[in-house]
Image (cartoon, rainbow, N blue to C red):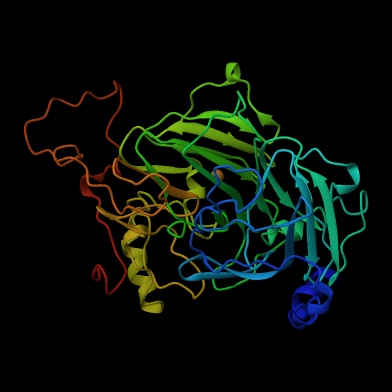
Length: 462
Ligand SMILES: [Cu+2]
């Protein structure tokens, strides 16, 4: 009941709970991204030890100020509005105006001071997942510190002990605060050449997250345990996820953290990846083997690397097929092969726009412009060079180009394959198709399949 009360009555209180400017005068300026949901360019370190910065797809990196040899950051936990994809904005909680919060990048050995201001309607804390630090800096509410009350600022101080791929998130009312999008990536770069950490030309980081937002509504349901309907990277769903744009032969690193409630086998087309690190640190070279799908379990981070030697637009996605879809009802029956013609006539007398779906599979969903409630996404989406894309959710592309300039992360557009190198219709003579023995053709084989589209788009069927 208390939680419900917060959600219904908190909106006004949130604005009023802001920390006064006077109180903040001694703190580093609160940085907020002006990039919207676009991918901000890498933040080149203006001071301190140099490093090759990461890029956060559809996100950004938090600037710091140097104060007597200490890097000072300022995180503000607050309600935010995140565009999950064009057409779907959600009320989330995040940091410094966005969910996930900005990526924090430091160098091994850096002394750090991180101010955390709470503008949420309830207490919070920040746990620095995977870090070696003094116990009292670990951010576990009730154990290592009291929760940071609304309107207050706490300070965390520690030294970045070891290089690697980490994340940060609250350890306070976790089910609410993480279901609302509170999390961020953290990268600690090595201070000197490290035999386990190869230099790379491209370095990306993303957090896997999931939301349960009913079509037509704006705020995630925070008590959902497993049945989420929006599968996102950095709180974005395809076609809202930017592509990973690299130069051919670049060494590419992608750091992936999972703060959803299920595992995600991350699959890359056209290349082999190696797990070069986890949130436990760099993996010993003898433990590495080639993969094209790397599973990232709940609460884990995997740092994968590959040499982008093949030109093209290569799919990179979660291999759970329901995670590459937009929101859908979970109670939709499988209709493949079910003859709906008689039923359709009867239903249309009552519901004229009723559409019979799925008789020949669901690929049609990518093409048809179904009337949707406001504030949701089609189940699949996007338009590729060869038509509609049957994908959504946790899906993007690694775009490998011979002429992509060094260090340039901009989208080069669609790949132009060499003539004669694209799958095409064949109209010549065919070899016999050998069938498995002792089988017969199924009654719903596509020979007589008819695809019915909604009224006004594919015509009525009478
Ligand atoms: Cu998945």
